[in-house]
Image (cartoon, rainbow, N blue to C red; front, side, top):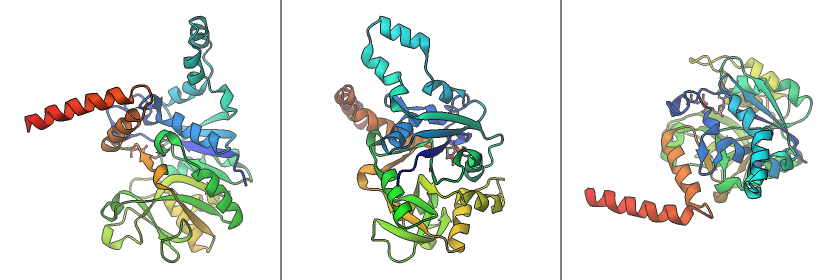
Length: 300
Ligand code: UTP
């Protein structure tokens, strides 16, 4: 089965990345040469997604501008015969349609997904977090595998999951597999938000990509806001598990590592890893880093 529609929630405040995100969306921060959300869009399109709804908010207009046609830039680059650069800023060939709606108050990821209800209609759809890249340079077929599982298992929900070090479970939503956790595709019976390592049901973390049947919207409406007033998407998925609906997980391969760019340590590391892999500038950066590391080692 091909899933054709996707929601990309990009309305969050990004407070963990202040002051960088004071007046620009965290999803527009560059990782090496491209903004984070461009990697997300390229990944989705390469997995067959044809229409994308961005759930945006105030101060997120630059996302809309980024994917829009810019006649002045187009003319300038054409006149300067910079055709390679032109290709990199022209999103027409991607053959995806972009739509935008606003989440009026930032009431959590569940609430953001609810903003896509009319867009999704009666069909299953993908949710891809706008601050998470899958794989170096977004090379991931996970969404296509998830779509196949959605179809073959007649699932209500399929979630991408990733192994994390057991001592880090408290940073993630962790899934409880039905039995064992050795398989690459398995059924989930429960999810726990940020458990301590000793109470975590596994070390498999929810990794920023979900496929849902439209039944998720009713589940989200049943979720009560948490202490911060946020409607959590994981609570809605928990309701699905409790009702005995089939909630499946697809494990990401090591090459599909999730870059969750929600905090500075992870942003810095992602930037450096992507820049080191840059075909033009990577080698030069490597030499510069080696120099810097040798200098800082000499100072210790
Ligand atoms: P996060 O959980 O990282 O939240 O969102 P956040 O608000 O962006 O960041 P912090 O916690 O303040 O630092 C994961 C994804 O969900 C979107 C975000 O834009 C991000 O892409 N999101 C989150 C929404 O669209 N709406 C929300 O209310 C919350």
